Length: 351
Image 1 (cartoon, rainbow, N blue to C red):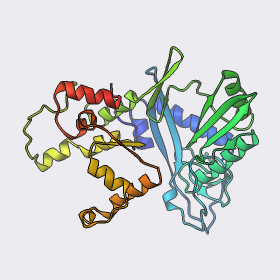
Image 2: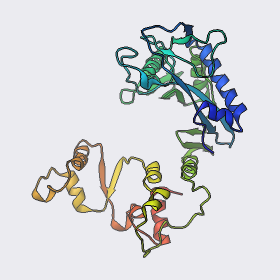
Image 3: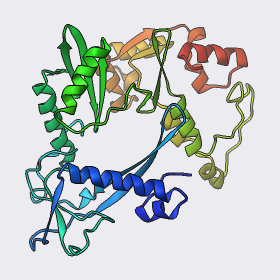
Image 4: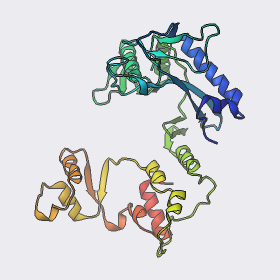
């Protein structure tokens, strides 16, 4: 069963009590952080609506957490009236430069029904919310002695008693790395004295990546993410096979209805990642990518593909030669015998 798509959907299901508790917790947090004040609706301003967004989060130990978030419907904001600057690499609650009005869904104060909430701080969904929080987070971390990485605006570094501490910022999550637990606890204490945070302890999952610790080593895998992809496309009960296609298999053209019933691009797209180093077994392709050739033989190459040559020249992409027998990408382009399939899997680091 998927996440509820609306407040009414959440309260109509078997987990209504859990979702109500999650909404109550979110609303109390907004009130505690003094996000808005109730006022009469100004005649010269439109009310920006809001909606609840629900997410059932699974922890690495199998337990679940019901999370509800009040999100402003920022698509109705008008540039120059409701907001100005919007850029930011990430995050929410911070002082607004312009007054925005938001009507909290499902939490109307009795006796003050006609009034609306005049926002004092940004909430999720507002076009300027990410910038507002990023400015605030940047200010707080720098006041605590952190230096922003010149190459990554969401990465902050600091030395605490000679120990390295790194804080990564993603939306409203702060991911902390440290040489020792004492240095990490020192930073957490400083943050708790500055802003309201919830310490979730040692990381077990982040952006679909599971984090495990064993014998002094940290291991990363995407098994939880892959399970969600299988559930999304209703393949969680499928039996595993040794290879995706038998060599010599004859394919037929599917009907339109079959194409819609068995999506291909979506699940493959869910698994794609951008490479850093490129391995190629085609000598001609390597030469074209590495040399500024413009002969008649290359005129058929579409312009956008010449970007690869530019990236190679700028040393953003590195192309390495690999023998045809060692090419692991064969697993993606052709049907292979089980032994060859397993070899390619091993080369790609797939379990």
